[in-house]
Image (cartoon, rainbow, N blue to C red; front, side, top):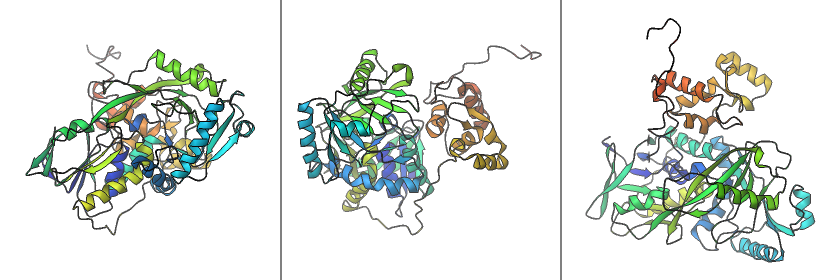
Length: 484
């Protein structure tokens, strides 16, 4: 891959993908690199799915500024990109009078951040809004701006829209270093060759420090903070209508109960600082802590309602601050690093980064033909019976339901492959095939079969995600009449 670009964006997580889309509004040759086999980065695809509004950030902080700015942008953004988004609000609950004092201070903090529409609630007001909460609570803080979004779909939509507007996207391509001469960026070395460029954006998340070191920048380090989650089934009788949050601790916002846009409940996360940037294992101890703490808020929670458990790694930075910056002595290098709220701040962070790049000398000429609209894959499960009949008439493969738990048809899987899905997990992230109660027990073999057929590869080469995650090693039984 020996190519030339005006800008190379490293990392197709939420922020990197949003930056690529923002840059696609201008007459620029833009390349987006992602080392993983699919877009979504590492932290973004394990995000809790809530869109914060910045009410609880330190006043004057960059991530607080971006959180407050980004929140109102999501209404139009998700409409343009055809992404599920719901403003459901959040209630931060107090379990004692000390917690209630914290919430009073939190409301003052929200006002200092420009979030004026929070409201302190009595115990009776909270229980009227959320009757399944424990009778032991003493009050709460209502934050109506807080929202939820389909995290997978948002990042995919950013990239699809950026690609439709001219951005070149390379997955499975690792950025190995920066080519620098005379204090200026000359290119980006990848495991597929060099891309010559004058500007590079380091949006590498957890691995941003390693990439920065290749340019001689070593004034920060990133380390992983593991968050473990329970994902519960849909339509449970004790499911809250709003996000339920505790009073936070020094490490995190605590264990939340977050309804998802698809009707499940997400419990967690934990917040454990670890060393291994690849350790996404779950632990009995971590999940027990999640269950214990959320049951203090909603006692009816039953672990038997769990569909799955998983963990994600959030990037934490030393020094602990969010940074969007250029660096003296490395002209053309721009860095966006140090936040664990990438989904929530992504639309504002993208504009902020592009503005920084313009000040650094990037020439921006607006495209007259930029198209902000991206249409998602038509979901059979969301269609009315009449619409389903019409879909089947146009394409009979809509009638072939591959994933029964989530009602995903063969036609939808074929469209996801056409758009770039190349693994079972890539299909899962786009369509939810395998996310239901049976966790792929029924549909996985059928998805493998379709990927094998459509990509024209043997079934043994179909992967769960990264190289080495193949499901099959060969046939264990020949058909009747087939030669040995």
